[in-house]
Image (cartoon, rainbow, N blue to C red; front, side):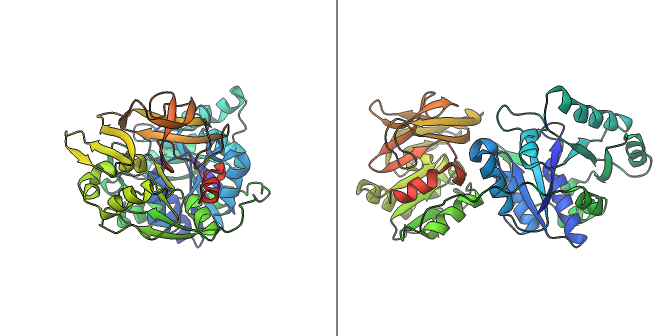
Length: 432
């Protein structure tokens, strides 16, 4: 599968909308496009999936390693992959879009906000291309997609100013239907606030799909990984608006080695009969009242006390805690498995790639083992003085600045989101 990376000059230039327009343009041209996302984000991929009808792959060398990033790319199928970058092209200490493009050896299409410029768009793109040599980055900035650009003189001024080696690949016209609302963790999810289909079709008509497809190339193929044998166990995975942050590769790894059944605590489902439970992250703070009345959380508390293995990531950590207080001051009693009272804050409390080292044997790692992940949350936890932690934090914030992975019984609650390529979920399955 050939691919390109759509990188921005900075956050907020409209990379997600540009990615959706390119996906639609390729489909209209007869290609079978596949979406992917550089970095650890869950939200932008939900918009990719809403338009492409297929899961968007997470490509993050910090989370998955270089070989794991390539393996995850090649699981996508299709014939042209469109990788949406994170932040600006060169931004990010350990997993920038530039590094993802280098690891995959993919050309970069630079998305430039052209709303107030013409020739300056060319100057900006040239600067981004030349900067690669200044920082010794193996990055091929090969073309430009003009975001929020009009036609006529505006478009021709941009196109004619581009130097040799920088292809003009089209424009995304300004349109209210292409604006995606956001909230505290980023954009609304793709099934909540989809881009207007008519506006997207209009934008796709101005994208040169054939030129993008001709620019794309195939990354190197890594050796397959040993995923371990099927366990014969049954894993219950929470899946609804409160627990919607799970990487496709994680779901596939669980299904590949266990019998997976999903349930919705928000909808009032009971906890299924199972040998282990996975609570992904998401938005439990937006559904705290429903979770407080959920029979699944009541059953989870009982089963956890009996030794059922339970893994909660970020939002899952919140649901497993004793209580959750919203920014409005409303407090809701939740599962009460972990000795923590959590409250939501007005601004984010942690945002970073993280590294954890296991203090003892835990659900996702053996003593002394390390895990790499990502944290992004607006909550903070007040934990009991005698609370037990599974991990020391070597990078990031964790639960209390130096520790992460609250443990009780065989339950683990962590602020870190980890990828299947980390080995964490294989370890979890082997513990069942």
